[in-house]
Image 1: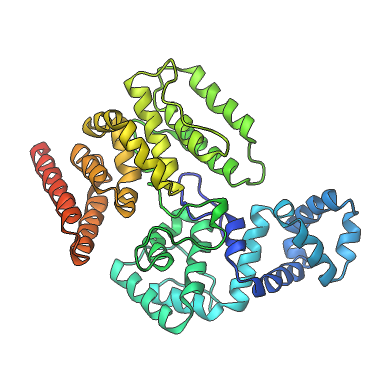
Image 2: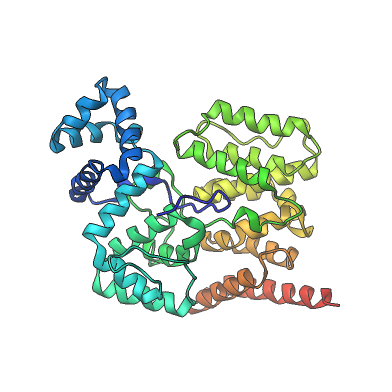
Length: 399
């Protein structure tokens, strides 16, 4: 399994959330599989990391830990799992668990997607996203033959492990998470990182706006929130963002990260009254704040902000490019899922050529069709009208 790509942010939780989501009866199995694997020299780097971190906590020598029988070692590790486990260790744990205990499901799902694997459920070669119809058929087939909860958990592992590669699964994952389209469905363990939306990849935001520095800052915030190995603590992160802003006060998009941090990091509060704010700085701050709140599914706070900062949002959404374009790319689909159709329509109309292109607009059309089937004529009409106006603007821009 590969590692997370910093250019892609998929808000389906952290490794710790995946552990919390695992059935309690299966957790000892997963730990035993990991502990047995760590006896092999193939995983010696991961073993040294785990035993070194665990030894510091329990005040044992590493040699003493390695010499313990599996049952005692499992009990020690379970007590300090969050401290001892690195990203690589979590990745290995879930890899071993799924391959051993759910190999049939993995093979069935990968076969349905047309993705090559080694016969044991481990995919090989390049992953090419399948057609939507093929994905839906694979999900339907696996759901009939295996537990839907197990399929959802497997998708979640793939999305956390390699979000850029498996990002095409996000809608299917959300459908399994909340098949009735309710607002309250959450997987176990979601309280630590209560998010289920896919943000637009940072490198697909307007090329003249977001840079490598922006992607690094976004990744730093996410790592701090998920308490990843080597992540900055909250004070260090605050200093980093303040330093970037202080180095170039005319780099308005840096305020996106301030708003994003203020909504993502525990203990922080939103502040739209910074003395240096002008319209553009405030709009970028609003963009970051809404992105963070949407990731956390803070529906009531989002409602409050749309009321109190309506002028800022309308100004940004109506001006092509800049913070409005960033909002269109990162927020449109999530707002529709949350029922904020009016705001999504403003972004579609105002950012017709910036809202993620035909892929996003086609997805919005499918959402409108779903609303029609659900007899939500008002919301469907709002989206269809916005799409019509967006198409008119796109046609007018053609030479």
